[in-house]
Amino acid sequence: MEPSSLMSKKYHALTFQINTDGGQETYLNVYSEQDLDNNNKLNIDSIAQNCAMVELSFIPYHLTHTLIWRRLECSVYKEIAWLLSGSDNKIHLFVEDRQSHSYMETDITEQLPEFTVLPSVGLWIDIRYTHNFTRRVSVVGCDCGTLQMSLVNVETNSVIFNQFSILDGPITQVKLFSLTPKDIHPPNVLKSVGVEERDCNPDPLKNDLHLIVCSALVPTVVYMNIQEQGFVERQILSESDHYDVNLCACVADINFDGFHEILLGTFGKKILMYTWTGDKWKLSGQRNTANSVHSLHYVDVTNDGVNDLLIQTPSGVHILQHCPGRVHNVFLSRLKDDNAGKEISVDIDIAEAFLVDNVSVEDSQECLLEIDEPPIPLQAGDAVDVIVGELSPETSIVSEPLLETIEVQKPLSDSDFDHKPLSDLEDCPCEEAFEQTEN
Image 1 (cartoon, rainbow, N blue to C red):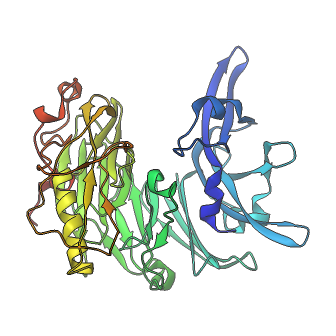
Image 2: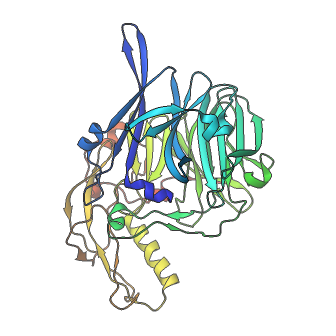
Image 3: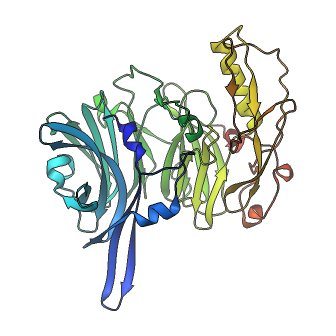
């Protein structure tokens, strides 16, 4: 079974602590939903009814999930499992008992032998499968500064090698990534009509796997080509220690050039952006924030096919979006490069949004966009739909430029999150929201 087929059932998990008269109790809750509506949207009521609760005997630290291989009689199948690091210096593995529809802890040595022993609390875990799911690269960063990387043979479930490095101070995050995007993830509205995920690079290079390591006391480090070089090829991100602790890292193609940039969130109210120049990582931009940055994610929250930058701070979650006009231009330029001389038709339905503590889409209205260049057909009878905001059953042929954006050019503050229509905000693409830095 392919990993994407597991997504027919959606999972959500969280850990929490309850204060009682006898002390404190900690729990792991796993929510699941199998029955999705026609729009492939989550049903909150259904999720709440399908909750599995597991009482914990330790304080939870980092919760993540991965795929494991389990044997049932004569067959082998993939299953989602939850990994949770705890105050007992262990990583705990939770899997679903399909008969009782509950979750239970299982021996991690049998499934993930690389996590059997840790020197201290594991603060962050990351796992990546390679070589058509025959190899697994596992990384864990510990509170004592120990960085552990393991290469595992999935077919035999044996550790090929372990490598360790000691950093000064706790490791706040580790992240495995590639220089170029590997997969195309279409929005749910396209999945509902049969558009599937695709591999952008069916023959990836073996050495296109790298590792970001954020530390509390030293600059952030990027280890290049870790499957071949291990921890040998190390690059320090310049000025990454100038703004207090590096709390988080995110990998995203912000400028649409086909290569990932590295974004760092700091306790010193800065987001730093680094660009790959071919031989090193260069600080190319930075952005002020109103509070310390605890988490960064580059995901599609509006379901329009374009990722948004989510910034989690103590004051809430702030969302930066790409300028629709720039996305439109990039889209047309890519079509021209790949389909010269073919005709296209473009339908756009844009919803006006208001910037509060997050982005909400309300009162969908039609907007027209003008295409200066003569239309270029794709194939006879084909049409390409560019969807910005929520998709409605009726779309309109575009004839006027898109001028609205929900991007805020100045540093975020509490005053930025009052109700403001899009037309009152400045037109600034997400990739241009970072102050350019000259090294």
